[in-house]
Length: 472
Image (cartoon, rainbow, N blue to C red; front, side, top):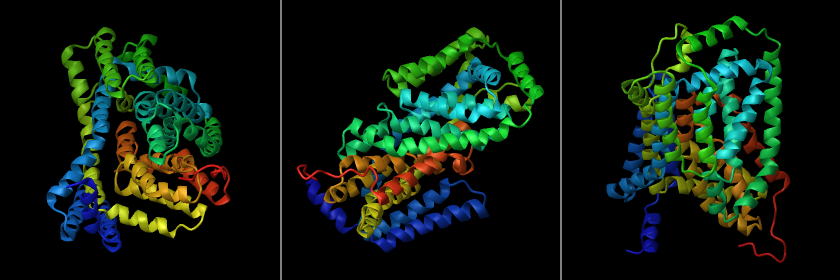
């Protein structure tokens, strides 16, 4: 059977708008009741909603084999992220055993003060992520260390995480090395560097506002007395447990350099994990059993200070399994919803409601947020709206780079704010802060979509085709 005929048959079986909304309402109710009434994690509610979606899809004419194909295809698209998650767990475990992360915390406490910490965090994570094109790698390297430094300085963890995520996603969004930065223009039909230049208008303004906000918040902590005794106790516990030397900063520098020079993320990060194991044996006198245990189950040591124990223990491949199971649960639900057309029918209805350019941009932004909430993956939040709205933008004479910019302004930036999205689950596992806790402080991620919508309604930087250019 040809792909065209197969697609036509699937359209005939596609779910209705009422069915699609009903499934989403069930998902919301299942998550809310599961968390509030039974203290359940989001995994089982997601799977229950997937079962409901599957039953409705079968009722519409889909076979289970077709739905399973959709699930497998969706999970396949996330396998790279899942493998990276496992490797990040190994990296964190071996880097803690090697004293790499404790060393980064030690030196960070020497040079940073509460007043400048949040601005410094935003700038450092922005530069690193811009250089390597990966918010995930940034969070797993300098991000974890900055969490430790900030807490040592007395700054609440959710605010620190908000600054890390704002900086990490700025770089991820603007770097030509980033996968999403390449994906968005590919879907919309724009060129990579046109796309990046066009994002400067919305992202630049959003970044400046974010920088000012963190500077103001930092002033609040600058007025507080620095707890010298606590910092001394933290550093004493670190130096009493680990050998601290600037040489231990080499692995993160090498990993960041490798990724910046376009070494694929998986071998680059795995190399970082191996370096961590080698450094653990050289500098901390660890044996192979300790290194393997740290890589698999995480590192565990008693430094004599509870706060430092929380900072230097953990990691390991096993620490990521809860997050991986969450991503798989979300992918199962998203795969059924996508295959059965439940997502597509809602997006189409939204597109028909948009009459003006501002309404079209707003609809695109809301669709991407909706996709991040329901499909559980930022790639789907970019690809599906991109495909659905591409022709509509062209019909209205809007250049493709307008659409590609909007796809990143909301699709990329709202993904870490959803706990069951692969990005939100990753940041939760890596930084140890729930996405709903850091959401109010992830200012760039909150401001950028709003700025994008404002530009849509005002027409500012919304570039149209000239009379001599073709719109399609």
